[in-house]
Image 1 (tube, protein in one colour):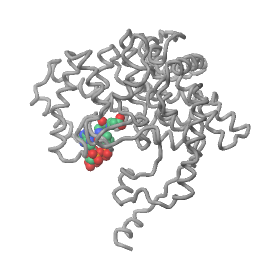
Image 2: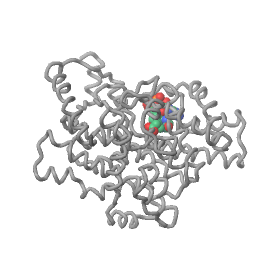
Image 3: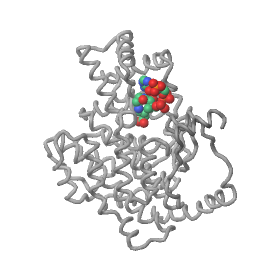
Image 4: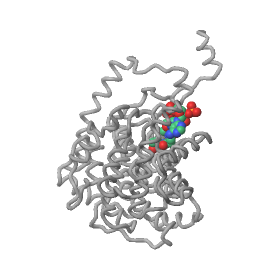
Length: 433
Ligand code: CMX
């Protein structure tokens, strides 16, 4: 069965559940909001719905009910590789089912056919200043492609609300096929003298990305792992929430994903992966390349905290344990690059940072997140331009955010519009008025 037919079946079966909840139980409370939550970024307020992934504070992410190791185990593997097809993960995120080999292969072929990026996108990128950040370039390229939106064209012709998901899926599939190509193009434009490598129409998404980046295997598996790990982290994080919010106005998916990229580009969110490498490089410079002792490393961490900065790669708004995405990448490092110097730094940080953050007593979660570990793998395989790392995160994150937007449209979620209050109103509430 094709992805679209399968998804159509799932959507038809799901809609009555949402309708019933709204009609029969719409007044039941899910969450109360405290003053701390209203001022403090709505932390922990349960007011978003997604079935694509769920983040348990102690266990970490589950994609469609499966942990990361379960997901990697269950999805069909690319022949000769340790990692699954990214396309299989797309199928899982969208439908909730693990695809068969033939279903994955059909989706691989479908995305291969959609991978052509219009030439004007390259012109736009080449017109940008040489010191533009890769995330600014990525976001610009995506919004420049907005005129390709199948959703917007269908909307302009008049589209019934229940049919919105279908052209949204078309946009999602086109973007999934093209974003790795655009990412690799930006990389080679910015750092490799614009010597571009054409896509290989026979390769899967992860394999083709590695090929266009010009990096040898097993970087193809690194790309597959990386895109899957970063795909989704339920809906409240800045990138996922931004994508959902923009999409809720029925702005088409190109606008939504360009906005998602902009949110991911913040150092408290996805940009933390470049910040980790930048921080480590700073320490390396000061150490003259030698690995610091535990005591020396503790001093570097305290110096960062005492100067009022955050330690990148540690802490999380929801997680209260080591991020399983960190663990999965750490296991990869232990297998493939146990003696790498930067991995030794990262591992030493794993040892020294959590007790320091606990001693400082501010961070609610002293444990490492996904970004603490991801740069070291990229560095090891030759991708040393660390300001590019968040583009990799963005290609991955678009898998989950676009899947969510398809479902948002399928279930007819309305425009998002929370209510604000004034400080005086909060003072009145505090005074019991
Ligand atoms: N280093 C220093 N201080 C930290 C810290 C860290 N790694 N993590 C949290 N804190 C501080 C916060 O800045 C905050 O300080 P103030 O009270 O002075 O404002 C205090 O501890 C409480 O914060 P929190 O409730 O534990 O964390 P938040 O939910 O507000 O923020 C996060 C979460 C991720 C932004 C924060 O932990 C942080 O800044 N981490 C470093 C940056 C990072 O790695 N971000 C990537 C996260 C994963 C991702 O989205 O990609």
